[in-house]
Length: 239
Ligand code: NAD
Image (cartoon, rainbow, N blue to C red; front, side, top):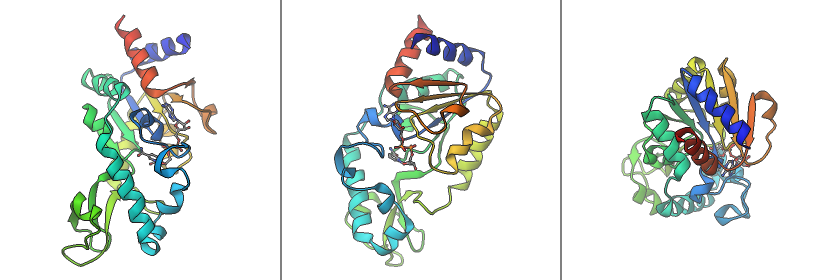
């Protein structure tokens, strides 16, 4: 509702440092399903059973099929107007950084520069054994690693793996110095990322389509679609 959006706009105007944290719900309006979606390639599959170190090691066929489908599906995917709004807020000095659990680089594609990829990127590839960089096409073709013959993998963080240290530290510091944290499109059920907003002593706002277990930790919860609401906020700000 309008009252809540106005409150958020006022906080944004007052803020000296704002950090954003996004999750799968930030990408759904670009056509990428989140965990709960009933559509597409995840319909009959719990991603948690394929997005694990165990699956990669012991069920490489399923692992490879799952990620190949996700990577191929990205060809048609573009950032939406919500990504554009966050990028322009960064250019205007309103947003310091975007920490994201998403792996398909839509924030960067929209022009955000200070992006911390907490769960890596699905557009980078490497050997699962020796760590040597690899190409997308090599992964899609199921080629073995040119250096050691090991299996190739995308550069995402699987369940059971630790987060990229630099991204985590940058995100942590950014939250620490922020007096406003805007969390968008995440159920905040995956650790340790779900603890990041609490690092800030400032105001915390959650924009999400559905209620989450963490709603009570926020000063303001706005229910709705990320792209629509960010667009609405930007329209209100300019008027
Ligand atoms: P999640 O699927 O658990 O939660 C997404 C939340 O976003 C849900 O509460 C849903 O109601 C909400 N949502 C959906 N569409 C929305 C919209 N248009 N606007 C606002 N909210 C919307 O996802 P999560 O919390 O990000 O995290 C779970 C894990 O899944 C993470 O590890 C993440 O890396 C991974 N994941 C990533 C992607 C991606 O990279 N695009 C997609 C699915 C899952």
